[in-house]
Length: 335
Image (tube, rainbow, N blue to C red; front, side, top):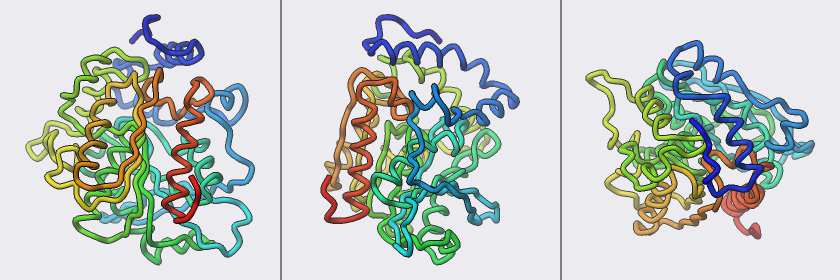
């Protein structure tokens, strides 16, 4: 794909989008080797990369653990907690990374997850859920639901210093925002964990791809309509028992009932094919009586939260996310 000079973005955002466009393409996501190489990459934790991604705060300790999913598979979890928390029982926020259910890894989200842990004083649990096409829908959703139930149980006490088992946060970006929304719906209906809030960052919530912004931004920087088609083809597959695009386990916007869900922050990007479905989900939640805060950030493409140094609003978006988490994870926090 190419990034047109007509896109109304700040120069530094446009330059980064152009560089990212040269480094990846739909054609390169067709083979297993290409997918594996893309999954393995993350920005090094050094300058000049950290000028773009942000750095990991010195006050955060990064660790790792795992839990056993419903089919017996061990799912890895990358953890972030404020240092010197002592015997404090920390609220927990689960993070589900983006990448179209096909790409992405937990280490690539170190700057963002560590920053939220530091600013909101929560334990962030970054879940390495299984990816397509090796694992079709709803495997990723099942892993995320199982992760929340694990975090809500005594089994998660092996993390060391305690985490609070109630009032969990569910958060993620893009496909991870989809998984956070799906997990919130499943847990509301089936139980197994108490969720205090959700934070959905430019979430993919409608696999029918029928929103106007999908056509308007079909050739947008970072995420195109062709990308979305390929990701969904990998995630859904074509088997006889494949989930339909309107199944709520794939498209939470199409759930028949959104009442009773936890408070939701929905952040969207104005130059994003997913903009309108994120907006529609926020409106549908609000119409169902759910507490919602929706912010649409101007002049930024999909994925902008991961490169705040190349945007004018990335810092504000991260601050809004941390404030939302702090206010709901720690009632009484000003934010």
